[in-house]
Amino acid sequence: MEKLLFKFASLAAADGKSNVICITSIGTPDGRMYEVPDDLKPASKHTALASTDVYAKVKNSLKKRHQTRAVWIPLSKELKNVYLDAGENIQYGDQYLDEITEGTMFSQNNTKINVPEKKNK
Image (cartoon, rainbow, N blue to C red; front, side, top):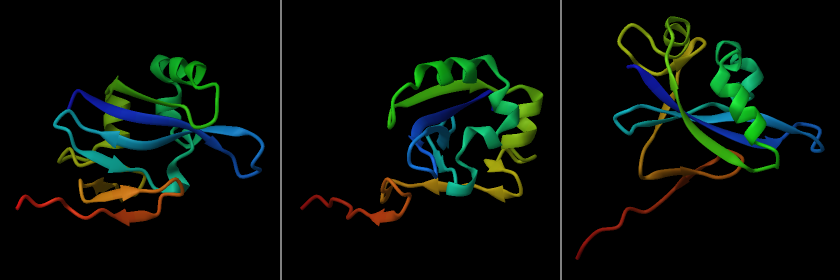
């Protein structure tokens, strides 16, 4: 893969007063989306990504709480090693990320909500 779609959001920090920029999900060029676990959401934990020019622009764009940006980021060799394994599966750290399917949505605190699928009669 040459690029990944990173979805960023400005969310409330643990103190409830300040904001923190988070990566909420990562998408692939073929349309699959992967959830970033709560403990890995703060962009400050993604040091390789935080050092890119694209991240600097995203950081400057997110001024208010709950604002979001989705941007394609080209993968350097370093970013490929961080976010993809040898089989090009989406990962971060020592874990694979869960794919977000159409039947699953997430609430604001990342709790899974099952959405009934529509059936044609």
